[in-house]
Every structure is written in structure tokens, then in C-alpha cells.
Picture 1 (tube, rainbow, N blue to C red):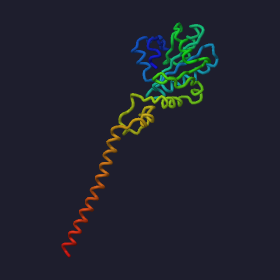
Picture 2 (cartoon, one colour; picture 1 turned 90 degrees about the vertical axis):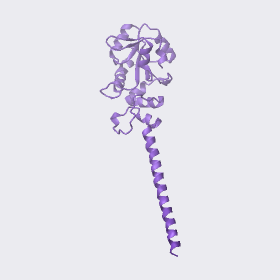
Picture 3 (cartoon, rainbow, N blue to C red; picture 1 turned 180 degrees about the vertical axis):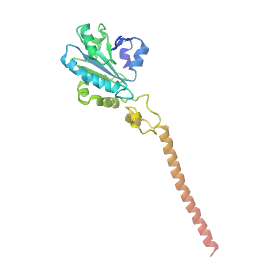
Picture 4 (cartoon, rainbow, N blue to C red; picture 1 turned 90 degrees about the horizontal axis):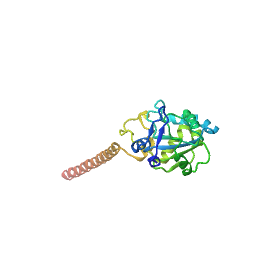
Length: 228
């Protein structure tokens, strides 16, 4: 997925519109993330109506006010606007942590053709390896909100790098959003050691009791023979 923009320029939708134009910046921003490509334009009424829904979806997964560990998610606006002024107007409504392709960059048309985008709004969702997770997630985002990201995670088998190593903590607030996926995929060394120790202890105890019973039986037999 990072390869999609490695030789390109992405722009941050902030006040200064900072450019990400180096390989290091692109990788640092997009690597190991689920990527949403948002195709839309200011002249589309449905697009304008969808923006507040998309913004709410995105901020609930990225804003520290809503979530302790921001999701591994990136949003790139692919403008199909007729003028740069229209694009700028649309960007003002879009979440400030989103990215976009510059208006003059013809790569927008290549992306539109690559993902067969005919109607807008369209949100193409890509796995970290670049494969298509959803050809258009607009309806899912409208219907499920931020909950649909969990479905994407499970499908993408995405595991956060920042997960907790110590499974002794039971406070769910301290766990990452991908904890259920991670727990199915991985077992901690502590769990393995505890299981191994328990099996060893249980087996040892059982064998020790059998040995004591056997010794007691032999002693009883010897006592009976001696006193016959």
C-alpha cells in the first residue's frame, strides 16, 4: 500500500498544507495502516452530505479525545473537482488529519482508473499490503460508523505494534483496539510458562501420591509376612 504513493507527493490537510515528499515521510505515515481513498468533489451534493459522517468516523478512530490509542488508519482525499478553488472549499470541510493529492497532480486520474471509480462519493479501503478490502465503504461507514473498522482489522489481520506484552492486566481500557485479534494470533510466554508449570506440578503431585501409596502397600505386605 505504501508503494502506491512512494514516488508521489501527499499533502497534509492542515493550515500550512505541509507536503510529504520523501520516502521516509510516506512510509512513516502509511506503513502498516489501513488506507481509505476518498474520491469526491465539491459539486456533488451526496459528497457534501457524506463529509460530516466521514469526519465523525475518522475522529472517533484518530482523536485522543475519543480513543486512547489512535487506530492504524489513514485517509487520503482524491479530488475530482473541476477547479482548485472547489477542492480548497471541500478540504476546509474535511478532517484536518486527512491527506490529499495536489490538484495539479494527474495521478488522481490514474487512481480513479486503477480502482474503477465511476460514482462519488467512493471510499476505497486498502489493506496494508495494497489489496482492496472494500471497493466502496460509504454504505458501511454510514450504517456501522466506527464499528466497521473492527471488521476491516479482522479481514486485514492487522496487528498493532504497540500492543501490551504483559497479559496480567485485565483493564480493557489499557488494551489496544486489536486486542481480540492479537489474543487469537499470539500466546504470551507467560501463558506458556504457566501452562507448562501447571502441567508439571499436577503430574508430579499425582505421581508422588501414587508412589507413596505403592510404598505403603509394600510396607504393609512386608509387615504381614513378618508377623505370620
